[in-house]
Image (cartoon, rainbow, N blue to C red; front, side):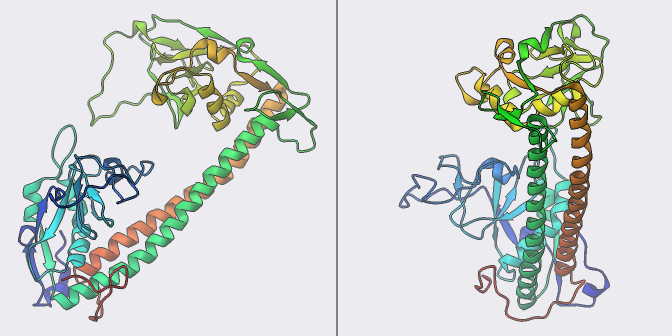
Length: 426
């Protein structure tokens, strides 16, 4: 952890103190016998385990469960294990900390809780680099306790905390605006592709009702055919020498990459794996309704539980992949899937064969693919530029925190207000 450089060394009143002399870590506080446990998520907000671990798509609130432990508003939480082990955050009002987190409680009157939070945030990189465990990483408690923090006088701590609340809040607002822009770009990209593959790129083309709700209106000269007349199933096996392919919700069908730093689980015998030839359609029966489908970029092997379909010539591979990875087609696959629980829905070959899809003339399919490539390239360039801006803003945020808590920038000493205009707790 940085010691603050020459600026700090000139401040004799700043002290270097191990974290264990500033705070204690607890697994949380169980509800007292006299307190009434919340009965619904509307009574008290809760942070789910997934939310604490940083999974942005996970719900922020979950119903009360006995395994969750209460944490007070403003408490400092440390994610103890998982992919984000070593990350610090503030507790929301009435939130709960799961058993994968720790609650940090200051044990020294000379430390301000808000300043403690910011100096811990500065230490995150070091703490996360020292996590232990071969499977699920977790915080190294000994390293954490021995981390040294620079502690200025209380008045300066409060000034620094107030300054960081204000400046990081401004940077966070900019990041949030940029992230919203990314969402809008992604939404526009999806809408552009869906419109092109289902309605064409000629706005003057007369339309007709396709007769199928998921498809809506299509150009009058397009055909609408069952997949049964567009694909045949391939069940070829016994080629263990071919490379492995993976079918992903995010990237479609790609060559599987084996990492050097992770233990990979592979089959001993690939003779049972299905062969997908270049240009074949491959999909995961259990995740087709989420978009786990794509065109094989080369000859390879896929799981025996996947489906491989050979195009019969009416649909170009590039057009097929664009069409089959739209949200509208995924929803239609969901409607044709079977299963007793939502996350175990499967689409079998008979269900896939019955889906009706648009079939434009081949030259028009080529034009649609080219149009989408040009239009999405512009959107992707905007996305990349926005992502770079977000990265720079986050770097600026981290550098600002480090400079403030180590005394590398001068912060005026004055009464500082917390996030809600309330003076920081001592």
